[in-house]
Length: 393
Image (cartoon, helix red, strand yellow):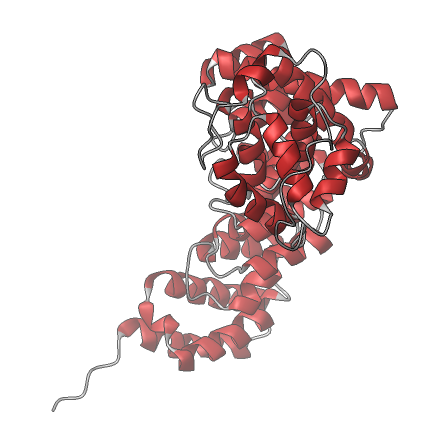
């Protein structure tokens, strides 16, 4: 069998090694560019035996190269998948004009490399990371954690970035105090109606119209009503709006927001047994308790006592008062236990205790109608859907 001839490009690599022995800057730069051009066009550079050689040569030559040569090298290797990893990391930490091509495009950089740039490099480098196409979700999360306005705004403008729902929600929260975030968040493809309702509360008229154009007006109106409740509570409590304070606020005022939301639903005629099931389906035990207390005409403390008790009898009584069909109670009880660490525990001790609580003398009309309204597992009762009156937390 005839041996495969050595490619001319591989031969050129070997021939150019002689230039490495020269101390003249122009010779070293000629060698650097020659190898870089070869790397871009020759798949042989991906071979393991050549990779080690290229890495050592590049790192040695780049250390003394002029800025213009390093920039040309960065542009040449920016999209080369077999460029030496150590070299690409070195170029990514260079001054921003040199770093930009590889930070933006190099497939060699890993999420760990990009996160290190976010933690150690300049703000210009961090902005370039945020603009990188198809940015990973872990990298995006670090950008949101750092909450630098210019960097988060660059991320918001990067519609190809992978951003988790939780981080997208934090970006909308941040837009309340960072005006530059509002326009890109209003047109962000990940924006949903709940986040749009929050954003609507602090954008100008032009962006409000853009939000209305994207989402059904009736649904957005209900979400805005909930958003207004959140702002009312924060205002009443005098809560700060810094990122750290906002996180603390969410735990402090959640119960107050739940009461406001339930009041809004009740005023709109949307407080029905289906709300209870949907709250449990979405893991919102606090909202379930607040809505159940309002529907049954008891206090939230009564509901808390019932769901923490040793038997489910009391909870059954309250659920019956709220209008939940008894046949649906076992499923509801299972959901409550899943969210409440297995409580109420035990089995039914006996017939429901009739005198635990009685309906108020004048029940709200929707409660009286709901007493016989069965519910299904989707959280919608048979008399209407609660989907357009849902809140966000």
